Amino acid sequence: MNFDKELNARNLSCPLPIVKTKKALNDMTSGQVLKVFSTDSGSVKDMAAFAEQTGNPLLAQEEANGEFIFYMKKK
Amino acid sequence: MAKKMAIIATKGTLDMAYPPFILASTAAALGYDVQVFFTFYGLQLLRKDLSNVMISPLANPAMPMPVPMPVMVQMLPGMESMATMMMKQKLKKHGVASLEELRDLCLEADVKFIACQMTVDLFEFDKSEFIEQCEYGGAATFMSFAGETDICLFI
Image (cartoon, rainbow over all chains, first blue to last red):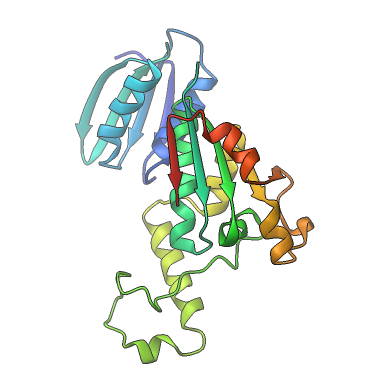
């Protein structure tokens, strides 16, 4: 999937993946896609909850080698 | 209109310092307007220097210890500093942000900090020891915001 910006949130615990995602989105324009790498298993539910509450669609998510990858579109 | 959250932070130990800052920074990231009212021991969390925010195994039987430790041993001098050092190492190892980092994230996200004026007077605290980004007020100041919140927590 194409993306415009990448965020490395590996080895960070709650709430940093969410807070850093929000900060990264702040610097982007509407329609751009952010790719987030996380190793925090709690971020799977949290990213979905973040997307739902902020209205930034979570386009896709993957899990590979103990890492979680999220594609979030800025609303 | 943005949702609102208010937190009353009343504790000044390392373990109890995390929930207000974690919840405040998260709520701010979710678009909430957030205010935190720091009162009594919670005021310690507004100090410029947070190195005295500690955790004690004493009277804290739920704290996981590497080895079982009798209360008599927990009372010994230096135990609190040791427990605090170990806890900070553990937090760091697990990628949990430091209190300073979380507090900065809150400020960056426009979380409003209100320091209880009564507590400052009661304990004769020196305001110069607190961060400049907090306001001083009383219960009524806090209530004008708290009365309109969607979430209000006492920690």
